Image 1 (cartoon, rainbow, N blue to C red):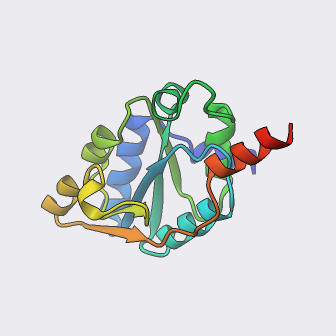
Image 2: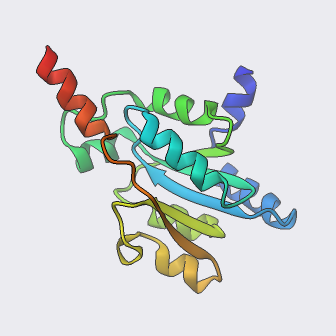
Length: 162
C-alpha cells in the first residue's frame, strides 16, 4: 500500500515518461492543479469529478514556497510531504507532481494533458495553460464549485476558535 502511494508521486521527468506511456496506451489524461492545503469535501468532490473526464488524473501540486507566495506567510498549513501523500492516497488520483512556480504553465506545456480542469471559481479565459491545451487538440473544463468549502474558511474557523 505504501509503495503504491509512493509510486504516484513523481518529479517532472517521471511524469513526462508516465504521460508518454499513457498516450501510447490511448488513455485520456486529465490534469488539474492546486495547493490542496487542508483537504476537504470540496476538493474530494472536485477531484473525483475531474477523474471521471478521463482515464488518468494528474495533479500538479504547488510546492510549499509557491503556496507561501500565493496565499501568504502562514500557508501552507500542511507541509509539502503531507499534501503530496494525501493527494497520492486518493484512489482516483493517478499521479501527483509538485511544482515550484506560481503557475503550472511549464508543467502543462511538458505534459500536454487531453483535458485541463479547474473549479467553478475560474473562467476558461483565466485558466493557466488553457491556450496550450486547446492548441494541441485538448479540452478545457470548468467544474462546479461547491460553496461553503474552502481552506481559507477552515483556517478562519480554526483561528476564531483558538
